[in-house]
Length: 325
Image (cartoon, rainbow, N blue to C red; front, top):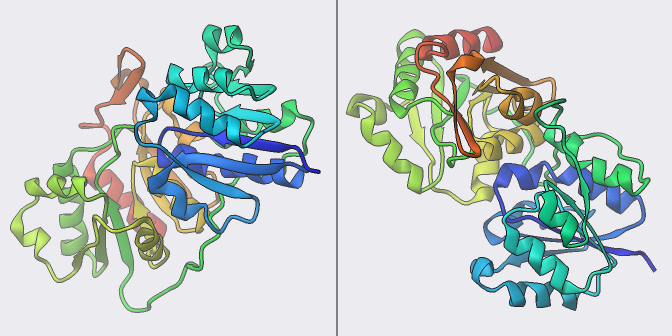
């Protein structure tokens, strides 16, 4: 019988997608892999042949540690993996679950005291792609790792619709990445509409619709601008496959595009732990514009860039035009 492993993630879409190389390595290395991820993301993992069971994380898990521990215990797992042992409630739930072997990234002193095997990421001192960092968990188990590209097993494949080139602009970043102001993306859209015949597809969440409030009505109402913000993840995948380029900061849709082999262009901070080397599209279709390090603003554990004046809408437009020809 295969040893059973559970991977628990409580964080962002991009983090979950970049866990797929680890999932594949474990499956191909002889493990039966279950995942416990935020419910909103599970559609992207439902068809993954390397996953035995994809379970939704209870939205109230932070206040119900004992219930989360019971959920972990019910699976009778041999191994628990926490690719991000934060916040503390998930580490505690793992301790109370009774799972005999537990491994964590970013576990810190509390992870060690809770009996986890804690691995160091080296994300600031020796930055490398985030998926590669997570693959250290497979290496620690002496499992061959294979490639580190994110995977989506979707029926949607990249396709050309013919006619004008289609460029996606994703306005938001979910608070997890440095980003340009909405007005800067409006200026970018204006360059596209006045200097090319490209069509624009606006992507984002329902809550990010408000970012369009700063856009002039003439831009929002243009027949060459299509707003698909607020759709389901499956709809977003379908829209991304129709694009010739996606201009984006948010790492979730960025890595959907990477998995679907759609070219991307992204503004990034040069701080090691936030850089495109760690979080960028690592396939041959990914491009990044990187701001100077002195623009990085760190507050507590969060570091954010002010791209103003260093990565401009004109910079993005000129780079997009060089990509698309």
